[in-house]
Length: 428
Image: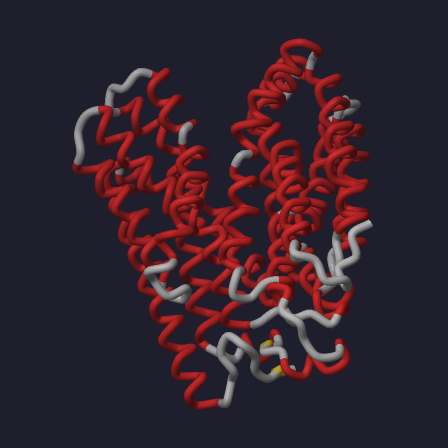
């Protein structure tokens, strides 16, 4: 097997990126996106209501957020290899259990388990791996990873629909479980490695001193230190607001377009293109981020999202709708790697899992509130005022990103000799 400690032209970090790209695409496609295809067939066969079925998915999202902090702590202290390998094994068993449910209670228990496992195999632990293995090339590695993750809906929604149509939803789940087992368990177990420092390398594959001396020269901030600074809290505000606006946009765009007199086929098509626009945004973020400082770049993406909402409100005709979805989707898609990059840039790799896990935990409220809260606001204010409100909140999110950068700059001047790109001190 490839030995990372031996000099190769190909840095082993890119092997890990390739493996995680495949496993993220598969895990997101099966554990997240397949639900929307399978749920209507479950309702028809088992006689459950849409609210009863989708409630299990909401429970999973809630538990996923709650698990972010303990998973982050595990990743920082023990790495991701065992976590993601075992998590994939359990995910396969849960899919097989889902294929056999007859009781609503059992269905909820299965999806509670899937929600917990999502935290072990989705982006957060994968981002922690990238934060450790890359520094200067971190943005590129994150973009590659999230690009493939963004393809999950485009690949697995049609694939799941085909399997359900051909074999029924229960057999489709058995087949998806097999795909998940083949494409995630062994790749996680065989290829994931803890850190380049274990092999005498610095991030990005640069030769370094002995592994025992590398930790002392690695810039990193601990979770308690992060929580004492305003930077973390400004970022929490920013990413809560974008989660709120993104979920509301994707859930209520179709009802809004129908209310405006568009045909259902058009509304479904343009809303379904959101995933493709997100992928395009991640690709475009590579050259664009080279002209904007990494700590400021997310603010630009917030503005692009807000502009998409403004175009939706002020434009008329199908072209304006396509432009709105393109802007909002591209901004939303590019924010995924941008968020991971800015967190690693501010806090370093050693406590990345814990700090990012705390951020995920504190922003979970937005994912829980958005579906119900936005619907309530739309019923009271109407869709137009809802979009204006979301545009305003998204602009505020961009301002919070700038405030975070300002707070960090002040902290750096006040507190230390924190090193820049090539090294620093550990705050632990």
